[in-house]
Structure formats: structure tokens, C-alpha cells
Length: 226
Image (cartoon, rainbow, N blue to C red; front, side, top):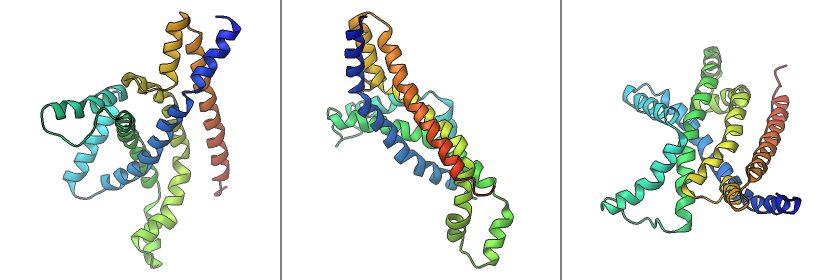
């Protein structure tokens, strides 16, 4: 590839950066709150509920994200064909994106749930007892005392998942979603060269580096116990 071809390729791939970031941000928007809810439900004393949550986490963490994306993306059309589901327009532009976000959010919520659970269980039980002695309700204890400490403890593990998510957005191309990797593969075919893939790799590397620096800054700001 000539230099002009490389610049043209960079420009084309850069146009797909926004759709890639949309998958990234919307996945975090839904998976983090859902992960917290799942972590809290998992502590439910009613065993059937906790067993179902454990099964959900086991399936999400034990099967490939690509398989989950394909399953969710094609399950609804198959259900509609069988006459079991109506009212969803699978030909609309929003269906592809919605199916992707559902798959990504369910998958990452399972990982975040385990991170949150570990953070919550790492807090000494004596703090709960002390809060109760001071007249705090369970809700006040969780949000004003436990949660701030949990956030500090889970930042390193959460940063790993968030950075992994940046790279996992490339899996969206399995359903032909217009993101960076799909664009790179198309340009690779056009130019019969691997250079577009290396260009895509640079985009992912830059995004991961920015997130690494951001989480490093957050960790320093949260070192309020030292």
C-alpha cells in the first residue's frame, strides 16, 4: 500500500469509530447497574433465586460472547418465524444495535456482578453492625458507608473489564454491524493487504491506552485511606 492509500484507509476506518464507541458506552451504561443488581440479588437468602443467578452468571461467563451475540441476534427472527413473538421489526436499523447491546450488557453484567460481590463481601461485617448501632437503615448503610468503599476496591478489576470491552467491540462484526473491525476487513479485501488490520489495531490500542491512563488517575484519586 502507498502512503496515500494508508491515509485513505485511516480516514475510512475512523468514520466507524463512533459506532464502535456507541457499543462501548451503551454496554457500560446498562451492564454496570445490572451487575450491581445481580450482585445484590445473588445474596438473597431464598436459595432458588440465588441458584438462578448463579446459573445466569455461569452461562454468561462460560460461553463465548460471540456465541451469545449470534444467539440473541437470530433468536428473535426464529421465534417470529415460529409465530411465538410479534411486534418487533427485525428489519429496522435499530434492531441490530439493540440486539448487540442486549448481548453485550448481559455478558458484562455477569462479570461486573462477580466484581461487585467480591467488593461487598470484602467489607468487614463489623461496619454493618456499627452502622446499625448508630441508627442507620440498611439502605443508608449500603449507599453511604459500604458502596464508597466497594467502589474503591473494585476499580482495578473493573478497569480490566472495561479495557477488555474496548477490544470485544470488534465481535460486533459477526452480525455485520458497522464498526472498526468490519471496516478494516473490508479495506483489507479492497487492498489485498494486512495494513488495514494493523491500522484498526492502532485505534484499539489508543482507546485502551486512554482508558488505562484514566483508571490510573481514578485510582490515585480514590486513595483516600492512605
